[in-house]
Amino acid sequence: MQDKYSSKNIKRTVRASMLLGIGIIAALDEIVFHQILAWHHFYDQDTQPFALFSDGILHAFELVAIVSGFFLLLDLQRKRQINYRSAMAGFYLGAGMFQLFDGIVIHKILKLHQIRYVENLWAYDLMWNIFGLVLLITGLFVYRNAKSASVI
Image (cartoon, rainbow, N blue to C red; front, side, top):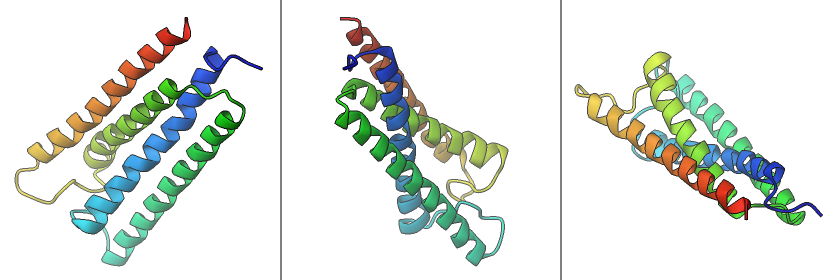
């Protein structure tokens, strides 16, 4: 049996849990900001029916990411090759990368939607991206600790 702290298992665990992080943070965005608060839809530049359709596409994407990540981690667990610190690292890395991708690429570069349609948007953008950066830095910190713990 392969050592659960091997470099290969750490990378597989990180990749699998990144899918979970991406899916969970996308689900939180979609549920809280798209549905509950109704601040925006995934694509706001068209009709209301198309905006709801675009939210459905995002929802399908997040479900595929969550289910895929879950089953990949379950397979690693079944084989006793999962590295739990790496799983936490991957979760935070995936969540942070999605949050920053959403805040920078989706909101600012592609302009598919804004966080909220208000006159002074900079505070929303700043907090959105700071939250993503905190998640990403947390993931990097946990990953570094997971790799150093695997050397033992």
